[in-house]
Amino acid sequence: MNSSIIKVEDVSVYYDNFCALEDIEFKCQKGEFVVIVGKSGVGKSSFLNALAYFIEYHGKIIRPQHIGYVFQNYSLFPWMTVSQNIGYGLENINKKNKQERINDMLHKIDMVEYKNRYPSQLSGGQIQRVALARALAPDPDLLLMDEPYASLDYHTRDKMQEWLLSVWQNSRKTIIFVTHYIDEAIFLADRILVLKNKAFIHEEIVPFNRPRNNEIRYLKEFITLKHTILNFME
Image 1 (tube, rainbow, N blue to C red):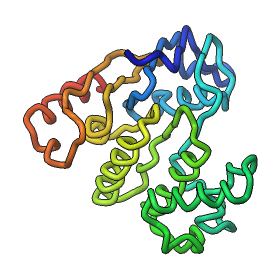
Image 2 (cartoon, one colour; image 1 turned 90 degrees about the vertical axis):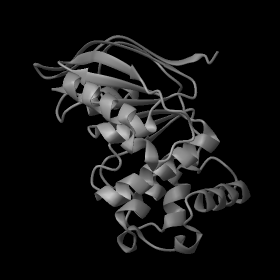
Image 3 (cartoon, rainbow, N blue to C red; image 1 turned 90 degrees about the horizontal axis):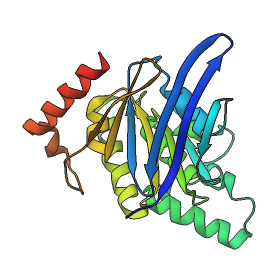
């Protein structure tokens, strides 16, 4: 059985006098793909930022020290090429190993031919692939993803979801993924948590086997699960 890699106990987040999260409890197993869903403004990003230690919180969080983070907004450095962006977090390894890691990531995200381009020369989907490669390049134990596909069009988002699953299938990184798209959550997750009223109010184990393809989106079980989660979010 996989060991627990994250433990969150009685965690609350306050912004001045406003309580964003209250007495959150959460555990995650190593290698799990967990998706957190909820309407805009319910505290999904606050939870992820607390996990990353980006913000102050009350309570206890135990998680791996070495994490990667993919942001909702395009977060590449515009003055750096694709290769330079991927290699940004690899300053502590020698030049040869750094270049090998960059080349490996370029192949994994299928962007070898774009390695010398700048973010302004890339599409939204390409930018997010590079952002994920940059997060994965240092080989983190935990990957946090904050609505990374929210700004993409419907078709591109579906393609990026398929691509992310293929990357995860090979790496088996522990991933905590935040979204308000229920379809996206079901397609990606091992387990879905609904965040509402400052706490997790519901959990669903996704019943579909892996690897997954787009055909499951049209199954009766998929649609039923979507309606169940939607009812808890309302």
